[in-house]
Length: 472
Image (tube, helix red, strand yellow):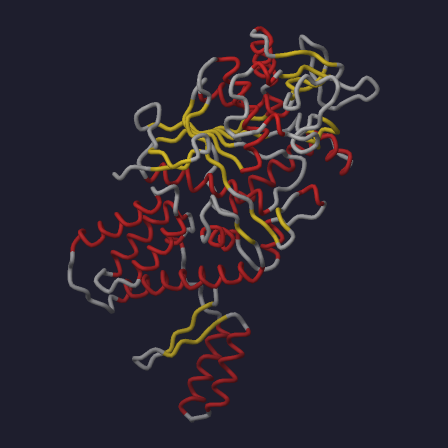
């Protein structure tokens, strides 16, 4: 098997991937804050993480994959200020925070299923791991990293050597409001909350007793506590969007390594933004595009997956319906190629000389070389198309390679089946055949257009027969 190379944000270069345990990979991915639906930009991050997981599995690694569900502590401002997003969501919809968390967690899981994204082995909720978070804060307190203000327990980032190493932060050059708001009670611009005290004049729906008083955990502490709970003090891979680099993941490193004194994560991988004409897609704007909206407009989750396959995960991806239409057309063409292969195999219409497994091995080698170069599935998809044009491969061999490559691409290609043609369409096809026999070309073209308007196309084959199929 070829070596796998991944771009490590920590070193800013591609590195050969070597897991801590032979053949086993421990991976943590930052999950959603379940106060609202995920938008299609959020889903691009989970798609890239799915490709990573599939590539690891394709390389015969055992993958133990953990993802958190943030259902408390993520404030509307990354500066540890403002209202908890969960409380805000509950007030918006007139429900309890627990109902909000359950509803949007299930909606998120449904989106993943539509995109054929593999579920993690462990889903861990912040609210179910409060004890672990408190213990981690106590560890940091014991080692002198914390101080208390009027609104919570804070991490003193000046005490942690190399704080900001992941993001290459110029801490001295940070301006107030650019990254984190500065208050008179904070000792340093980059200090952040580990535990927030409940407001004296407001009863929160989610709050717990702690050694420092009643309150709730800060956003960052949950990922450190839960990842180390399930994966150990040092593990292989941590993923997220690029927006997590300067704050959330930087703070995770400070918390975890401050307590354990050990390297927290060996490989950090981050996916780039999906952007619209106006810029980055964000929920804070009030309106955002959801996957169910695309489905209502006639696109499938796999259409959107194919669209995302067309750009490398470390490059910004610009969304437009024109681009999505182009991707859908390309995906339809690919599915039709699969249907043609299946049809040929079923009828045994083509005989190709037996070249054995050597030719197939060369294609597999090209494919794995691309995906092992920092998850270059965009190139891998192109290799799939090139393989389908190889006249020296038997149809059965092509279909076998399609199935093999799709273990990474995740497009459910082997499941593509020709739909049964309705009698109404078959009658129109026969009517067109008679019109052609009678040389009524205008009538025949009119019937073809009618068939197309109903979602089917007629193909006149070289051997004189006619094939009809659904426009996928």
